[in-house]
Every structure is written in structure tokens, then in C-alpha cells.
Image (cartoon, rainbow, N blue to C red):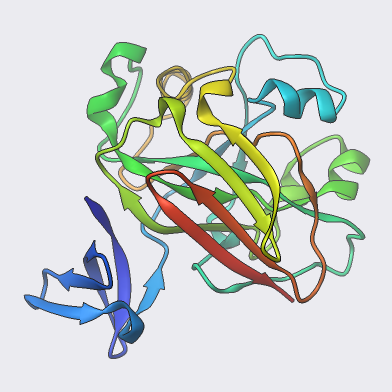
Length: 241
């Protein structure tokens, strides 16, 4: 099942997606996708992201393979909807795309073991962990580089019934494939990540975990169209201004 939120006739509704239309449970009506604005499919209290979770990406960044997950937070103020624009900040000279699989939490999750994780997951979506790479290298920290407004697009919907262990993930820039990998290449899989994070901080319904990016990260320019495509989920499209 594909679920999320849309704006229809100026009002926000939850939605269940069906091919070229969606069902709006609050009013018991169907609406064509061409008649709605697709919104981000979750309302997180926090976005937890994972660094260097693909071996080839760690190599391209010149970093060792981590012994345990490396996590950081992105502010919810960075969220933008599908098809909205990523804004390049004036203080950065290089802003990169990072296509990722994201986990959306379904119920309060604290101190959970890996074999218990599945019951706490609502589903999965596409995420683009936009990064000011020059500032990341300058700061040695992630908050500024990853926290600008518009640096957390995700969507377009949550898929609730998919196995995340071996999904093809691609990023396209202006129609050209620039990243391609599989979630099977993760160093720490979804269950390990959710368990690890839940033993540090309580996860709440709607919280998002971005699980890391394959190799092939590169920079964005004004006028670009960037697309994160994940097998069995769909495509997250955003533009750059």
C-alpha cells in the first residue's frame, strides 16, 4: 500500500495512492493525481540520518568503514515536498545530492532489538540528503552542511509492504543516472539501524531515518532536476534554484 498526504482544493488530506488517483479517507472521495499537490508523506519530530553506510561511498569519501552506525540529525525545517525546489545557499560553493532509502517509524520505538524492529516500521520512502560538501569538509561536522532550509526532500509516498533488504536505488541528474546501487550493499541494514538508534533516542510515529547513500555523489547546479528512484517505491523529483 502507498500512503501519504496531499493538498486537494486547498485542504490537506491523508491519501492512499492507486495508480493515477488517490483515495482521501477523511471525505470518502477519490482525486486524480493531476488534481492534487503531493506533500511529504510523514510529519517527523526528527530526521535521523546515517553517514558512510555503503562501502563504496566510504571509499569515495576517503573514510574507513565504520565499526558502528554514524548518525546525525537534520532539522525538520529542512523538509520540502516532492517537486519543490532545493535552494543553493550563498555561503556554499558545492551542494551535493545523496539519494537514499528512508525508513518511516510507525509507533513509539525505544530500546528495541533487531528482531523486533519490523513491528515498529510504518514503511519506506525516497530521501535526498542534500549536503553542502565544502562546508562539511570545512566544519568537520554535519549540522551546517546538512541543515539548510530545503535540504531534506522526501517522498512521494510511503510504501508499507516492501522488503528493504535488496532494492535498486538510483539517482538521476537531468535524466542521467549518476548513482546506482542496492540496499543489499549497506554496511548496517535497516533492522540494525533502527535498533541502534532506538537505544540512543526514542523514535516517534512519523520519524524518518535516512539510511545512507551509495557511491557517486556529485554536485547540483541551478536549473537541475534531481530524481531519487527506488525499486518498488517510486521516484522523488526536485528542482534546483
